[in-house]
Image (cartoon, rainbow, N blue to C red):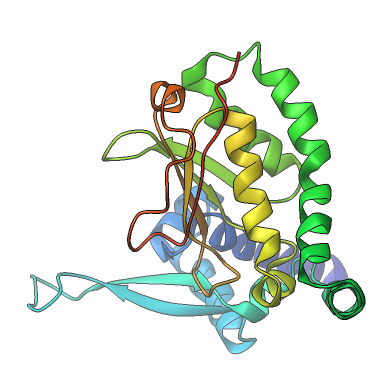
Length: 241
């Protein structure tokens, strides 16, 4: 009975960590609501995760002035916490890419990165033909989630869509080899048939990989558009037929 209780405690703690990974930064109250836990239970799991260095506290509130009450306290995953989710092969992958770069040059790394996403492009471009334009980003997010990227899609406030990836299995390797992120951005544009702009990446130190997807009608005449100031990466997409 004692062992069962310990196992259940660990399972719940893992679910708390997973929610923070996928939806963070997030408040303790939101975690309790989603998991059906009491405030005391949520606090116990958060304290344990904080002690292990898997999450970190953050505060949010009006900048430059104090609003009423204390700033909201949120919790976000740390690099160590993200590493606990499927990063065991990072060292080997990094060594292999360094070997490739030394022996064949940086262009070989770029070609390798593109080859890694080529299968996804081929498969999803074919499937996208049957998906309405306004549902394609959500469809892509679902496909990425199935591959372990914990992705979500939402409407962007300034038009278009926003694609977020809350987990990246190759984040530590991509920090050294940005070609992996660049190839993925190109792939999104090809799959969706419209220009996309990479706004943030986990590999760069951001909490979430964020990509802005232009409205589909923009793709009809925006191919080849350059990267605007302040945006890390942009890729044009061929119109989807």
